[in-house]
Image (cartoon, rainbow, N blue to C red; front, side, top):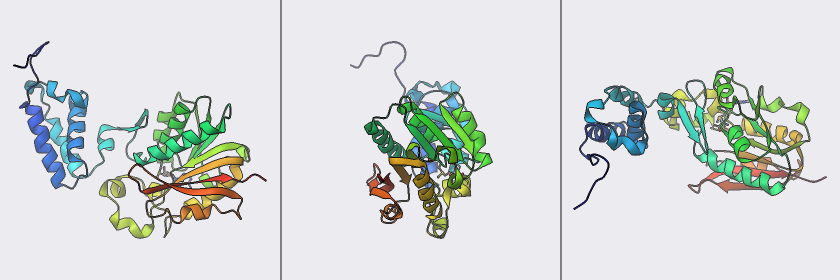
Length: 293
Ligand SMILES: C[S@@+](CC[C@H](N)C(=O)[O-])C[C@H]1O[C@@H](n2cnc3c(N)ncnc32)[C@H](O)[C@@H]1O
């Protein structure tokens, strides 16, 4: 017979777990992509426990506000707007209306960039994050690349209200401005430029998930008919900022892998332009090296 130590065994029929099962079904019916994950995350959030501790919530402590947050998620409000936080690599960020919620696929873009900077063997690498949003990329780079000097730029004042809170106390130097004209004082000195810019073609508006279309800022999503307007501008910024041998890393849509590397041409002074997949093996980011003179 199974023995339990230190109190009552977890009750698989607890009120909360039964409500979570019901909520999962409601979210699935509403088309939420990961219904069980979100039902459990919201239960943990409302009851102030970790997801793995849901079984320990006593029946008498079930909080009916759970159904209020489930109704919001059912209406496709992003999970991260409801909880007010997003996780990105080893950081936790504050997010909400006005700022883009960082996505898991960007984590592999940052992973590649960290490896690239480490391989450079520069003592205090100079890194620039263009279009920083919540500051997710810049903060991860600062945290994971020891002695790096990380600069970030964001255009939207609404987004910056969140970015400022997130970068407070970190090594990230934040500026407001247009990425196409930013950091003239760093021209020719930067080791790595990284960006997850807006890249969705305007023509794809109707296919965008409601969480993004209705809650992420439009400025964070769309960039011209083919989605590449800003990436073309960022090529010029990266060209200006990077030292010879420096590297640019730009995220793009999974349909753009055949286009973005071609923006970084040899005629413009680039070498080793390549495209890379994310963890789901979908084309996700392009990289190129500023050629030696
Ligand atoms: C797709 S979001 C990415 C945010 C963040 N880098 C991330 O990965 O979570 C793009 C961001 O670019 C900002 N943005 C758009 N156009 C810009 C521009 N011309 N200059 C600077 N930032 C811009 C948007 O406000 C938004 O925060």
